[in-house]
Image 1 (cartoon, rainbow, N blue to C red):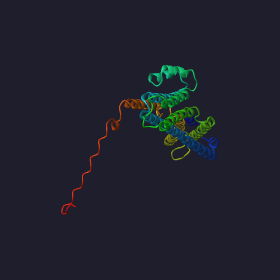
Image 2: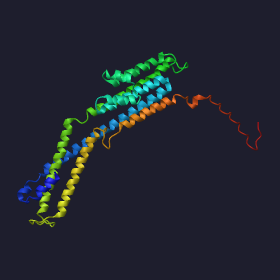
Image 3: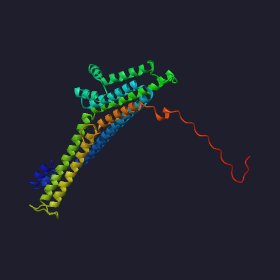
Length: 324
């Protein structure tokens, strides 16, 4: 656009008629204010959405971490492993659905990571909403824990208290599922189409007008000396250069802000500044596996009988005073 304007106006003889074809100042000022307002609001809104999505990711990670810790400290290995598998699988399913529906490659990934068995995958493929079905399976397994022999935390822990301790596990599973599902909703419904197009139209119209004005400045500098004296064939090279350079900077700045705002509307993908959800999925599953490994050994504070604390020694009597 800049090159076309420069090429056209450099070949046109500047005249009074051409001067009258300049963009009216009041229109340019109004368009400038409107464009800056729309662009600033557009950037702010998309940044707020990106920040909200990142906050939801952090909350989801916290839910899975708390579930791993509570399940590892409260439940037998069998049920702790099942809950950790299903909760991590729920997150994987929702995050994988950001790039489209579940396919054979995505299901195979869940099997390779040990999150789901082939039998579980076959059952989930026959039903809709696999993540919600997994959620219901986890809740059913959680409800079975207090009724099976040898599955209580210990004879000193009443069943009522044990059931109360299971409630936070349900809350963490539900929190992880709900927050992960919000990422899919954010991806499907990003920028409203009408809002997106009006911002693009306003910014490009503003840049078109400024580029047209740059062409006028080039045409004027092409027929004037640097002393501001009209002379046919004269060229004020510094003014031409400054007009072109400043217009390039203006176009680059406004398009940069526009594309930055558009990029922040979806912070997951292959762009350089995108957030990598795969790192979170790997870290959380490794974290759960580490908790499962630690369940094979009792904590040091519980493995041995604590030694009694030494008796405090009596303070010696101060010198110069008789002991009573």
